Amino acid sequence: MFRMAIYDWTENVRNTNQWLGASALAFGSYPITGMVPNPFFQLVAAWGEVTERTYSRMVAKPDWNIPAISDSDGKDHVVSVETLIERPFGDLLHFKVLGRQAKPRRVLLCAPMSGHYATLLRSTVASLLPDCEVFITDWHNARDIPVSEGKFDIEDYVLYLADFMRHLGPDTNVVAVCQPAPLALAATAYLAEEDPAAQPRTLTLIGGPIDPDAAATEVTDFGRRVTMGQLEHMVIQRVGLKYAGVGRSVYPGLMQLSSFMSMNAESHSKAFIEQILRVAKHEASDHDKHNRFYDEYLAVMDMTAEFYLSTVERVFKNLEIAQNKFTVNGKPVDLAKITNVAVKTVEGEKDDISAPGQCVAALDLLTGLPDEKKASHLEPNAGHYGIFAGRSWRNNIRPLVLDFIDQNAPGNENKVARLKTV
Image 1 (cartoon, rainbow, N blue to C red):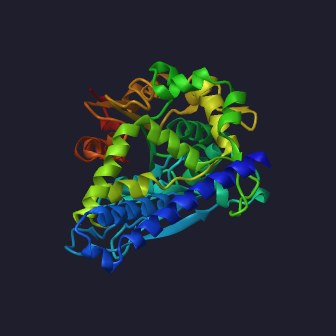
Image 2 (image 1 turned 30 degrees about the vertical axis):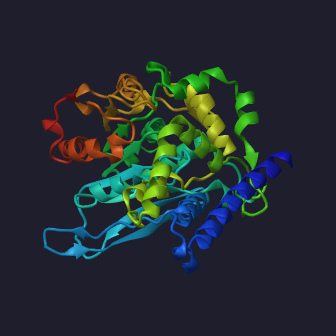
């Protein structure tokens, strides 16, 4: 009951701040305030507007809002989001471009389940849609999943990915971004033994912790410093009375958000102060740069406790993927079984979350895969976000990923040479 009370207390704090922001906005917006020759009321209203929006976004799942796609026919085609597989903890979505002939490149984006919704990859999806049929894993907020649906841990995650790959078929090109990279690798190895015909054609791993010990970061240092008991005591709570998942043990999204923001507290504080001043001077807009970023960044979701804890213990502490000792339902998943899936790794030179060396370690683990089916890329001066959604992704990495997919398309297998860009 104590952990549930803490969860509800946190929600009460969020609700109160949202209410205070809305009240300040209303108070500072009365017409009579225009008679006061002082910016006080404008600043109160601006603070209220920014505060109310900030705290309301923390419990709202963002929309995809994918813009229409232009095609060779000169027309703009509307994008609809279709659910292909619906599961308790996550769905498989397809971004269908209406009125357009299906593209030969089929890409499955494995979105992270690390605090934010899959919409974090909105710009990645939009950049791929002109050239690909795009599918994505859409993980659900654990607070909305009844306890009766059971557990969801790291092994269940791998089985979900394997089922999604199996459904899409062997002509699929998987792109795993950050956290799911080691698990997408494990899912591919799982299929290599259980259902070889269902393996994807290519697997691109972007900024993922395949071997966390290959390069130290603040994330890996934290994982070494705390014991599993300490971690559970510090971050695990139970969903409160307001949501369908009441009683489920989770790592709350609001607690994750506080950790994210504390890493760059000064820059976030500056951004919000500047936004308040812009609103007060009527220079801000509903979809300006600040709101576009923070509407997504502040939208957080709860993770099941068993998924978070098993990820820390098995990927970061026990290095089960890095040492090729991962198991699913007690059965070893041997990465050496991957023998015909082309694998490419992408890293950012200035990635402070999954540092260079952690992801490319995957290639050494694939002892059964010929060198001509391995590739790697290190993007100069790129941080973590930039390698899948920023300028580095758009200008450099995306073309390389598409070339990698094309080089391993049917009929091109014998033309593939080892591709390594530094």
